[in-house]
View 1 (tube, rainbow, N blue to C red):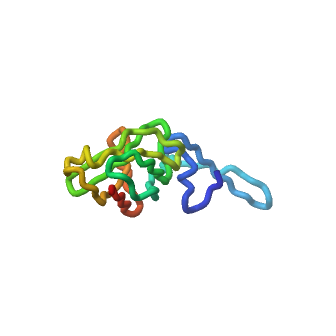
View 2 (cartoon, one colour):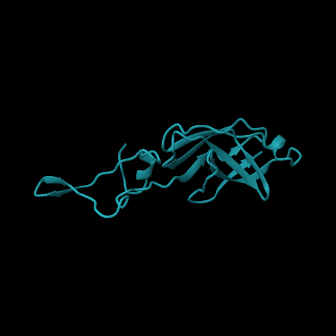
View 3 (tube, rainbow, N blue to C red):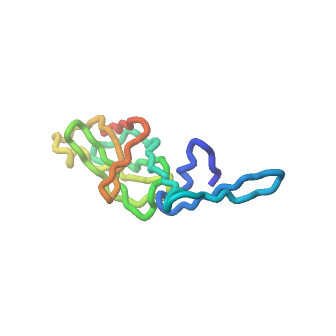
Amino acid sequence: CPVNTTLWASCFAAEATLLSAARVEGGVETAVQFGGAAGAADVVLPEVLLSASPLIGNKFGFTTITVVGGGFDVTVKYACRFTLLTTVVDSFEVYPTSASTIQCISPNWASLSGLGGSGALTTMTLLKATGETVTPVAPISYNFI
């Protein structure tokens, strides 16, 4: 995975990454040693939700939504969460396809929301099976029609 300064976390799983640093002087590469208390050199890669596509789907569900982000833990299941005011409906939980991609299947909003079968413009986030929410960098709206 090519590493760039903007999306470097998309290359790595949340809990399985070892980073090392090196210094190059006069063409000679030397490993940089980290010092300090135990854990001082640990790097935590935060999970980040960048985008989702498509952002519109049938209110009866079954639309495949590709979620793009970074730092997803491929050993833990996630669900796409759709919220309208106090109404919350989750997709079935799935494992990420990589540290940067999750594919959710939209739920049957018309049936599960209790709103009488109408569509809705919802706010989408990710919910980890551990109960943690992965909030998007910018709000993501998903439209059930």
